[in-house]
Length: 264
Image 1 (cartoon, rainbow, N blue to C red):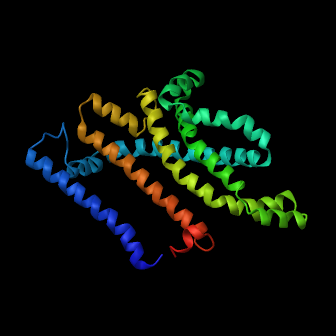
Image 2: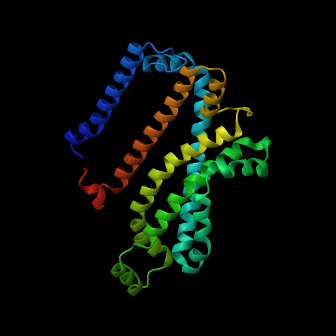
Image 3: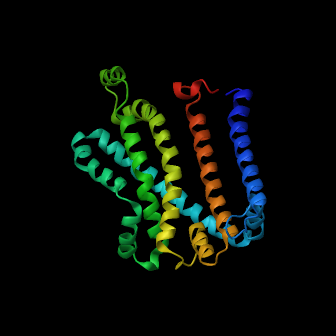
């Protein structure tokens, strides 16, 4: 990626965001809206700094849930994808249940998970909820990638009597890597969404509340600036996560895969 392309890719969204924030600030001030209805961006930023001792621990709780759920989704998703790729019978037998797990609304499943796991292990409940929504994109994309290896190369590996490990390491894994990374980009932010939704479901009855619990409590106290401050931290976490996944994808693919070679 050349310097001009980098500046365009980073600068254009920042300019649009700055324009939107300026318009928001001007409209609220011109309309003289009270901050309990809609605070200005400057008031939200001021609240983040003023309430940081309370917001920081909540942000770390949400971030921890997201990262652990994403790691679990990667481990289980890749392992199950490898199993699916090795056996059509296993894939046919189990894949519909993976789809069912994905399409069932999380808000409908979460109360049952709370009951089954118990209130004494609320964080584990939140973790399972976040894992559920992050798991399927990695599973489906990696399975597709493992099955997308070039047939000619497959025959070549068979001709040279390659072992299963050699076939997996030298052929299937490189073929599946772009698909896996595409699924990872989706799953990373879905894990954040799942963590936030799970916190809303479990409410504030937890020892270490996250950002969603902060939003819920702020709503009850009519503290709209704090609500927006927590929401801003969630949004920033999602944006940073997305660009981190983009950077990881570029780092791993830029030297050899056609989807990223042109970006060097």
